[in-house]
Image (cartoon, rainbow, N blue to C red; front, side, top):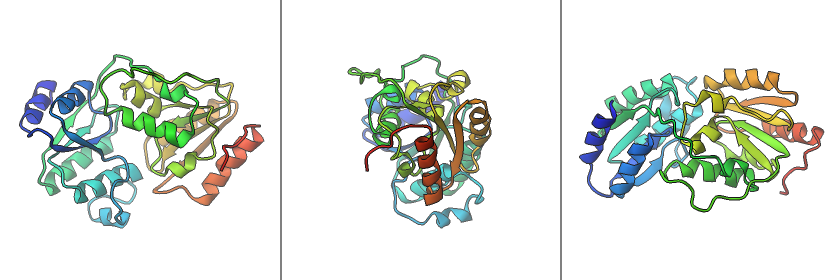
Length: 263
């Protein structure tokens, strides 16, 4: 769908509509939603407490937990429309999920491709803040099409987290507040989700965990970059992070001389 067609579709929505978003829609789309005072729901995040097995009637089990979460949210939230980025910054699986949603749901599914190139910066990725809170700031930032007016001060990194925001944020709790964020999460904050050059960046001087959701195509890049990194660890997780995965991350950080976060 062209930017003009996207705007036309959004213009038909009433003021203060309930709109679900998937991925990082183009900035022009987010500006339009804000102007219409839309109530935005990030469908990539677990918003409803329902059994994930409910998605098995619509999607194969090997779809990543994020897209199955999108489907679960869409089935149970009362939405006026869903806006999905199906471009190179998301994945082909999202493209096919848009088809599934269009077939089974009444609200219109507005597909778009975010090809934005303007860099908005990544202050939260470099801020000194607990990693779960930092990742929440990054994911929430996609709903604001404007530059951060009061950016946090950067910190010197002692560890790195590369990848996508995990469905289960408990995987992040042991990282120190001086962890820098890389990968697609950094592209999210920069509002350029298809910027592969930015996505592939990492800091070879700090121990870094390379993460992707199980069954996501990004597991290939995560595993590849972890092998190139002098002190890299590749991990993947499905719906939730197991105790063994959390223990693996904790051991990696401790053996790398990184003090764990308190609690």
